[in-house]
Each structure stands twice: as structure tokens, then as C-alpha cells.
Length: 66
Image (cartoon, rainbow, N blue to C red):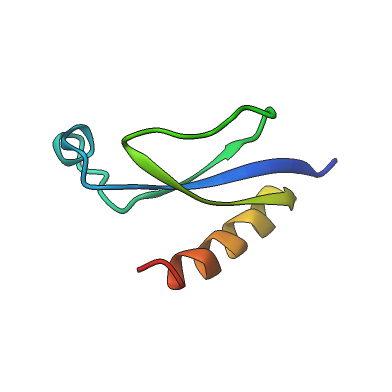
């Protein structure tokens, strides 16, 4: 399986996140060379590699962003 690029985001306390019960949720999405940014989440970082390794990396990023 080929490696991909991933963007790792953490949802903040925006009202939409509160209503959908996803405050502080971490999501990993494929990065299609977009400029990532939104009022409802913070970009924690990017990862090039497998999805499973991106998940491990996201846990490390989250430990430093609590």
C-alpha cells in the first residue's frame, strides 16, 4: 500500500462542535494539497506515511496540545 499525506486536526469548542458532541475530537484526513483552516478546528500537523502511523503521530501531537 502506498504512503499518503495526511492532515491531523483537533476540533475546538465552536458551537457546531458542541452541538455535534465532537469537542476535542482528533480527525485524520487525506491531504490533497489544500490550504487547511477553519473556525471549528485547529490543524495539529501533517504526516506523510501510512494511516496507522499517522494515528500514532496524532496521539503524540495531541499529548503536546492539551
